[in-house]
Length: 164
Image 1: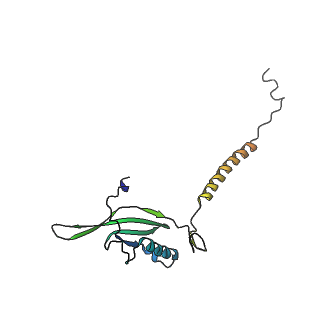
Image 2: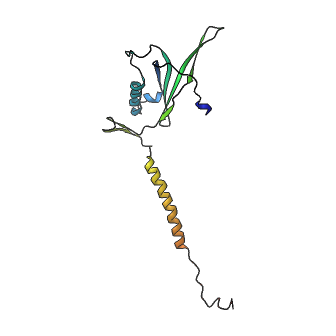
Image 3: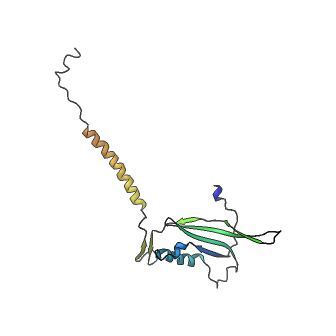
């Protein structure tokens, strides 16, 4: 929980700096190029916007790690050293933070041709189905073991006089 104590905030209506990982510009991953453009249009602010403040005080960072897109929000803090009068700039995470896993990218809004499909993605239904099948196999193996169990057959003559 110490990690989640995000102190600091940035001003409402200020412009963000959008920072993208170098993987978004890789020609081998065109779906990341498309996502970069979508994030730029979603989180960026047009220069002609009247309601947005004219200064920048936070950074939105997008990075790719293990086919997941990680989003972080940082505040830019500038402190002036009184002795040297130099300005020190640092970043403080203010949240929110989240990660995205791309499953599919469609040509339209929730419809149309599939432009990209993640080959690594496994649906939760197929995972549950596999767990159910494993449980069924465990039950079937117990039944088969009971059927294979051979009880020894004794003739009556062998033990006829033992308990007389």
